[in-house]
Length: 137
Image 1: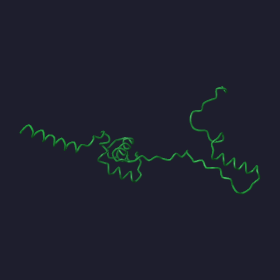
Image 2: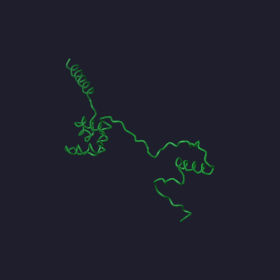
Image 3: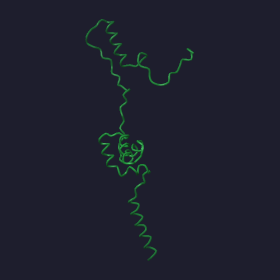
Image 4: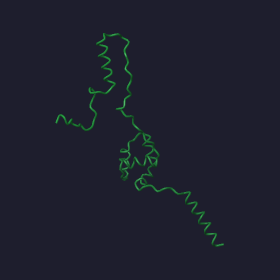
């Protein structure tokens, strides 16, 4: 009787502990856990991670803005917001105006419009390393 009783009690106790198990957070994220509701409110007000870091620093909690970012992603569950690439523009088809101009003027106008839409040697150089042509050295 004494052999079956402790094992059943220990199994029940272990089952309760397993059901209540919460994974441990890294030390820095655990520091921010008491401030979770306030951080959520700041995020709703569009506060930056650096602003949140500065406010936490005022209450003697020193963390980096990357730690605040990780806390927001992992603990609060904030979704990543991707900014639209400003450089990627949709190329629109060339529109021909219904007003008739002389052939040379209409060609020049259409070329100017086309140069605005399609990149070429007249457009700005792309950022990056400039590699010299070996023939010109």
